[in-house]
Length: 316
Image (cartoon, rainbow, N blue to C red; front, top):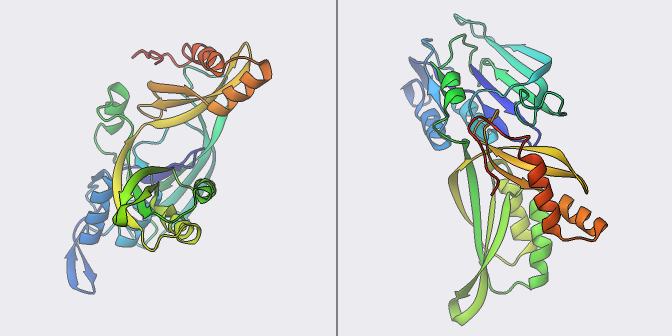
């Protein structure tokens, strides 16, 4: 089964991909399936794959490029309440239904078993059964024991995603431009922006500017760097990042509600990390004329019993 999921923070996930088998006719003659370009893309994205026994190309280079570019992680869909289902049929005749399905629903911010009354976030899950061109055929077979293994004891915490690092060295940019640059980069989807003091040629002090973003936002971030800085060149590096699943939830304190971000080993827990949102804490601290840390501690204390799991979790 080939599927994607779009959650509240706009992360996109994919189910493991059945890659097919046999050969396919290409410009260079007959090629084995999966095609070399497909294997390279899936290798770079660290995408899990399996065979469902169908002798046909089920992931094309175009489909693999779209899937690995748009997806942030791979794994089973989270627990969700289904709202709508969309269907689309491909043109190839396969032993299984050649259908593209899109699921739209809501998933709780943490495991619903712990918080049945909590509000939920919009969630879209696309169970991609292949369009004849790019997407994967629906298969009733699942990679053996994938779900059970993750539920019992996840061996890999979080998920793997592909990021792009953009770097440039600057020795002639006014400092005022840096603050403006930060705002512009974060607005178009940069995950992080930071600078480091460096010594450059001709004994000039300068800065090393680094931008971390997803591949889909790399071109937009480059455009901002070229238009808002004095750089003439940008170095581009593709990297892999292992990251926890993230979710937000509001907790009540004596000072008012505080938004708390949790890091989860799997979409359904356990919670491995937790941090109150700074702006909420700062706003309440100003309102009550007390220290920011007092609000932060109150939020952690309120959140800890809500996020308790069988594995246990201790606030840092």
